[in-house]
Length: 58
Image (tube, rainbow, N blue to C red; front, side, top):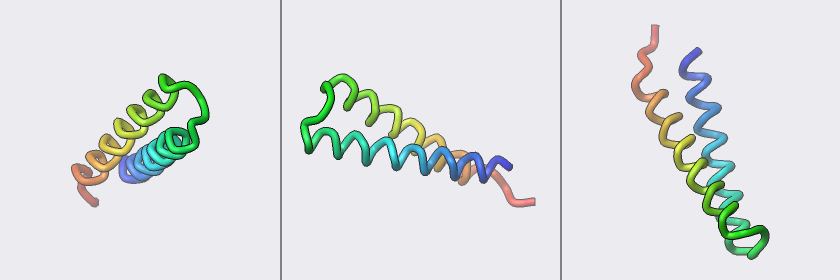
């Protein structure tokens, strides 16, 4: 269960980082919303990776 949640967090983080990068390149949206999307994406990505790595298989 924890590994599945970690995988979902990782995917959401990747999506957030890609969305922020795309918005930054296309100059769409405010700079504040782009920064928030990237920061939240990075947090989700690293917390998901950490959760997958630290959870042991049973």
